[in-house]
Amino acid sequence: MNSELIWKQSKRFLRKILNAEIYERWINGIVPISISDDSVEMGVPDEFFADWLHTHFEDLILDALKKVAGNDFTISYKTGFFPEERTAKPKKKRLPQENTSDNAVKFSPAPNCHSRHTFSNFVVGPENQFAHAAAMGIVGTSNISANPLFIYGGTGLGKTHLLQAVAHEATQSYPDSIVEYISCEDFLNLYVDSLRMNRHSDFRNRFRKADFLLIDDIHFLAKKTQLQEEFFNTFNRLHNEDKKIIMTSDKRPSEINGLETRLVSRFVSGLTVDIQPLGVETRLAILRKKQEEHLIKFDNEILSFIANNIVSNVRKLEGALTRLLTYSSLTGKRITVELAEQILSPLLEEETVSRLSVDMIQKKVAEYFDLRVSDLTGNKRPKNIAIPRMIAMYLCRKMTSKSLPEIGDSFARNHATVIHAVNRIKEDRAANESLNRSLALLERQLQQQG
Ligand code: ADP
Ligand code: MG
Image (cartoon, rainbow, N blue to C red):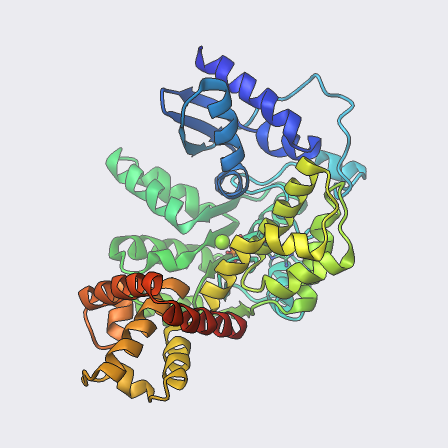
């Protein structure tokens, strides 16, 4: 069977099982580049799209491909591909969140930016309102006028969304201006390519012409001396000409390890704002807003359940909603809280993993065995300490995302000792029911704590 046919039939299969809206948005937007015996390369518009497919639909797609072609595939994504204009669908229903005014119909997204990352899709709460107002200030729509603007905060809290919203707004409101939105990683790649092809001056001119320079994840500059030099010069040029500059990062400038002090001082010369982890009210508001885009509606108690249990970042919040939407459109079942808990269990587990720390586990285990934390991390080897120590290591491995050497460090041991402990407890647990019960109890208590 040729590759085009495989993809066509897989799509047909997916269309049957997915809700029409989800199918249109995610599956029909894929451009198949190549299919070999065991791998598929898919063209997608941007990283966001690839990420979303990977997290939410990859299993379904692999399943469909297997049904059609009879074997297992791996999928890779390539960005920069847009589906051809689909002319045969003049009656395509406008999704509820899309603005229907004339302006909105003409909306053409800024290059490299996701069309949904607009200000109107951004939910403002006390945790992000300052960053939001400052970002609006850059395009002249709030009364803050600081430049450059440096926005920092944890992952999945909306930094990229805000930055792209500025790109869209600048493109719409100042059509003659040059808007450059780019991730720092792409900035590096372009720079390296330009050197390789002897076109450094093109690269230089491109960014020095910008009226708005919006650099995402600037912490990527860390330890890259040559790139820092390049950026320093571009930054100075633009700043002297009073061009607008926004940068985002996962840390404040002074905390970026390996960033030259002259850059740190430039970066904080305007306004530095953070986005705090979102509180439950904002998380709920985001879920309500996201739900507007879909035909399926959930009860409030379901949305509250998600908002109360998925706390670490908005990307996961969206992931949870999509998972429930997909499930309910595939099965037609009404989602209850019990069902939601089941369907979301992998995400809920991940949440606990990201919240629990080695310290918390050491403390809990010490308490349980009536020891001090220093007994677990110290040098003594009597059996009454050795076993709890191994249990603590085992739980750290299972319930945090820390690496073996990191766990080893926390116990003043090396990683081989951690491997030994993990294996030993795993075996003992299978053979010894009373140990198994103690571990189950510890895990439950830690999960509640997390
Ligand atoms: P970051 O760049 O901080 O890691 P993103 O901007 O990529 O985070 O946000 C992750 C996802 O969450 C995106 O899909 C984004 O649209 C969404 N999101 C984050 N914050 C908000 C918000 N306040 N309102 C609506 N959507 C949000
Ligand atoms: Mg980002």
